[in-house]
Image 1 (cartoon, rainbow, N blue to C red):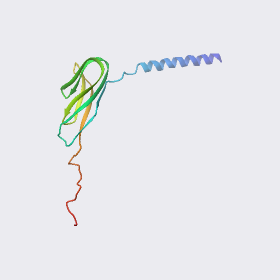
Image 2 (cartoon, rainbow, N blue to C red):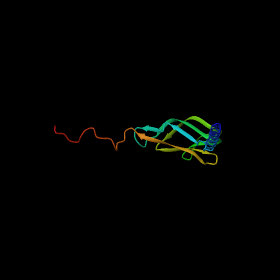
Image 3 (spheres, helix red, strand yellow):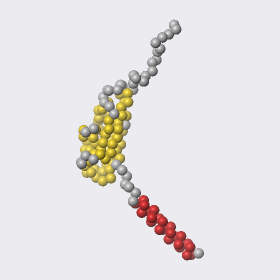
Image 4 (cartoon, one colour):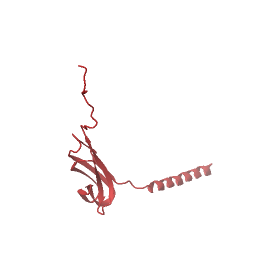
Length: 133
């Protein structure tokens, strides 16, 4: 009986080592970029939306990175692994923001959308064109 018990214990220990080795070889967490709010409301499409967004990002290792709106640099950080910032932006159409390193490789992207409060194209008529009275 003691042989069976000891072999079960050894087998469990070996399996736990294998499981730990697999957990350690899992890929590291990817780059994170969060921009909030993700939607800007305007009265009608084509208007410029001005707002302050909260930017929160994190990468695996410290690097020099910049936040871009199209090809325009908004803010840069030197030798950082993560950061939070509030940035004023103005956009007139849906815009993709990207976090790039100093070699201009895109690390992460996020889209900020524009929604119109009164879109005339889809607004239903409140009064009909004809009447019996």
